[in-house]
Length: 140
Image 1: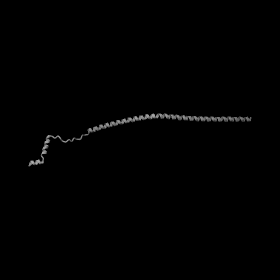
Image 2: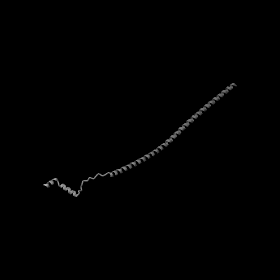
Image 3: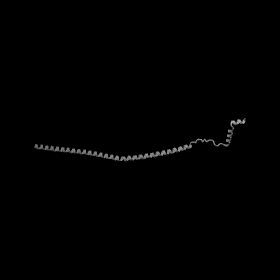
Image 4: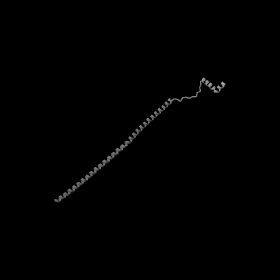
């Protein structure tokens, strides 16, 4: 009986060992499975983040291109306005130059005296004809 009880104890120990090792194995497998799931979730998260980043990168060139077109349109409009201002300024400068030319008095005309009144001409001739030598001759 004693031997039988020892055998039973041994059998129970074996069963307990097998059960414990089975539990340990199950626990290890569960732990491995949990690690695998964590790793898989992490990889899925990384892939999702990469996809989101790719989508954002795909959208940004279009946004940047639209922004560049808007900036170019604004720059063209600014250049057109500047050209209009320059045109108006040059028109005013031309008008001011024309007005200045009209306002400035002309230089006085200095023509040689070509038309002498006949009486003046006669008197001048008389004066010219009476030279001091002739007057001296008449007196003598």
